[in-house]
Amino acid sequence: MLHSALHPGYSRIHGVGVIALRDIPMGTALWWPCPKCSVFSERVQRRTPEGVLRWLGEFGYRRADGGLITPCRGAHLLNHSCAATVLDAGLSVGIAVVDIRKGDEVTCDYRTFRYDDAWHFTCSCNAPECIGTIASAPGGPPAAVSAAWRHRVNTALTAAATVAQETTVRAGDVNGVRAARGGDRAR
Image (cartoon, rainbow, N blue to C red; front, top):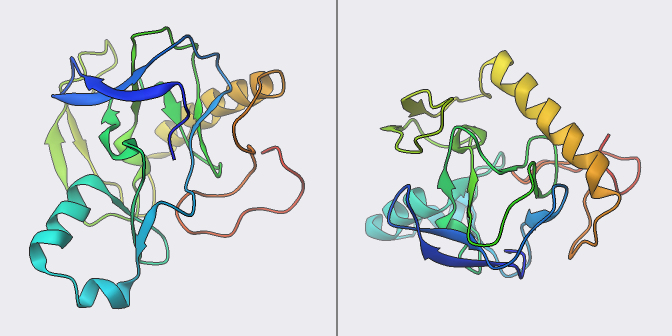
């Protein structure tokens, strides 16, 4: 589910994206799986028409349990940026890792989709740190990328304690992996 401050809109990166309707502070949970997000188990996928599976592959993402999830409320429109404003590494939510201004596009890093089938594309994010070609990373991204994500997420978690949230921010994994024990806040 998308945070109420987000809405589909024009993207400078790629067609349609997700835009902030108001200022959003770092540490705000902006996306999370909810009961309205459709999850297609592997069993259901075997009976699903090929055209639907192609759409799911384009706008959803594969979870650790083999299921395909299509996030609700337009969350499937989040575009990739090498300088993502939202990350979910080690969390049960996607959290704002920077302050986001009203009218800014909200982006994620597609390299977090580590359970997808192999894919690649030429990035058009135009961020100074753009790496050019983005590819899936089965099993996880390179160690340096993971370390950078952890640093950004940990900084955002410090801010999260001071931000009103629409959902609970906790350790875990949005990809169908059990959440870690030990409280509501990721460590």
